[in-house]
Amino acid sequence: MDMSEDCFLVPGPVRMGDTCLKALSTPVMTARGPEYRDVMAHLNSGLRNAFNLAPSEPIRGVESWSGDDDYKVVVVSGSGTAAMEMVIANRFRSNDLVLVPTNGKFGERVAEMCQRFCNVKHLKYEWGRAFDLYELEQQLERGCYESLLICHNETSTGITQDAAAIAEMCARHKTSFILDGITSVGGMPVHPTEWGAEAVVVGAQKCTAGPSGIAAIAINSNFIERVHAIREQGDSNPNYYLDLVSALKKGADDQTPWTPAINLAMGWGAALQVLKDESNIERWERCEKMATGVRNLFLALGFELLADSAQRSNTVTAVLYPEGIDDSWRARLKDDYNTQVIGAQDHLKGKMFRVGSMGETPIEEMVEGCKRMIECFKSFGLDLPNMDVESYFE
Ligand SMILES: Cc1ncc(COP(=O)(O)O)c(C=O)c1O
Image 1 (cartoon, rainbow, N blue to C red):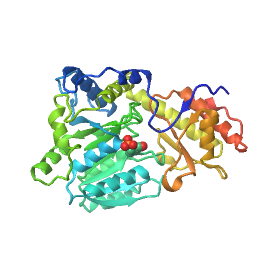
Image 2 (image 1 turned 30 degrees about the horizontal axis):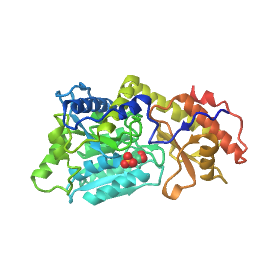
Image 3 (image 1 turned 90 degrees about the vertical axis):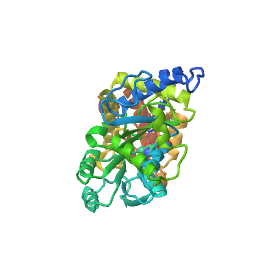
Image 4 (image 1 turned 120 degrees about the vertical axis):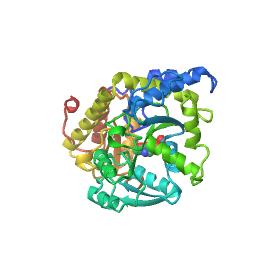
């Protein structure tokens, strides 16, 4: 086995491609001049494509953040959590009530974040189990919720929520729908317009293979009107750096209220161009192919997957360790097999590993990584059958 090339199969931050790395090292430019406004226009246009929104011209001065639909994209300096906080802090008043069903760490984080800014009904499902949609419907029937928020793709457990069904329920009950799309946007079908989503959040370092520390939101006109109305009523939650009203004042002009993350924006713009060149559909299909291969291969080897079978994610797969194996397997995989996957969080720590299938990862790297994982398990004494690994990824 030739270990000279590393296999980097974590569910974000993912490996950045050469065009992104090159763009990151562009010489400095001023934050307010035409050069940077060109960068923003390119980034906004790439983001609209990644969010699966109507296109915009990547040209300064033509409102690249909007398009022929009801949405605007806003770039946020900070990781995905900052963008999620911007959405929640600006959209709700402290006496609003929101519904947050969860089945993993990142959904629970959405609920926790909401608790800082409004009232929350947290429907906590077991990690990896699908939401009970009947229970959600019953809750929405009460008519008391301003919004329903979900973590669309739960990276901690490898489950994807049935966003279309939840969106349909929210529409019937006239409740706004907000998604943490941090590991779904750019990696699997996300349909903000069809779903009538008020806001969707993405982080650069996941499915779009950009740099860590920059993120974005896509928001519709209901969301924007509500944010302005709350501000005019003097009822907003405290915030300053993440003030959306300030960001909205600058966005039409390809600008940001504070010094932007200039080089991160250039790097992300380049990565989003790679996504656009591949096309959303091709990328979603490649992610699906890799995830399906990993799932089927490990099931055939006799391993168990954490997530409910009907809703397994196409960007991250959570595989339970067999009896007698723990995270020392992951350490050996890194040190001796030049391959990285990631462990579990909280109560599942040491009990499973997670394989990312997102970004620009080529299928060959996933095949090679899976072969090394199997060899590494064998080195721990597991008696595994010989597999034709390639055949799972055809
Ligand atoms: C689904 C999801 N939401 C939120 C986050 C937090 O994002 P960040 O670390 O970019 O702040 C992550 C990070 O892994 C995630 O996977």
